Image (cartoon, rainbow, N blue to C red):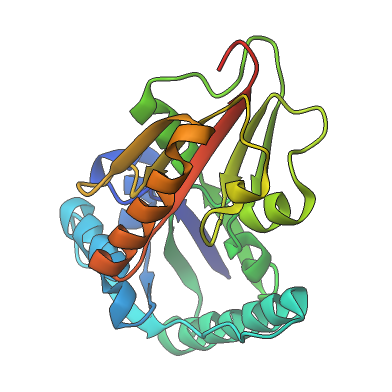
Length: 248
């Protein structure tokens, strides 16, 4: 029997690891580290650093090149094909390195349950039991960095993507909207009047950058800062929270 532990590791800060995550990594027979090309080599480096900090005994660590998603108009179809390819890669590595079964650890950015595909990919594996170790999400780190509550008083929060915000606008009935997976500047599709934004890139990491203010005043600053940081580092992960109303 093979057990796959999807281990939330927070946003790249080794201090985000829970004791449960440390125990899961040390109990693994095999740990898989994805590589996403030279431009995102920092992501693999951070995983290596985490393992160097927490492993107390030798564990087999195998790195692999993550399949690349096709750039095509059928977004959902491209994602499903991509997930199939990743699952096939995982299955091949597990069969090769744990032919008699065992425990596999996969370090997952943030938390596996929130806008992450690892659980959907793991569901494609046959004969593998999946367990999840929760991690600190980028949304938690964002609100902590700005020292703000996620929600307005007794009000709901919508968590959505940049693609949905750009296509559909401000979600109906929402006082607060958290936006993830934004390719850049989806908030430009909104009427900025009365909206306050709290933006962060590389939250929790040494290169963390934060901007806060009325969207009418800081939108262009966020776009310019994001472009500069992406050019400097070769990649960017950012997230933002917007709020309307008196509690902004």
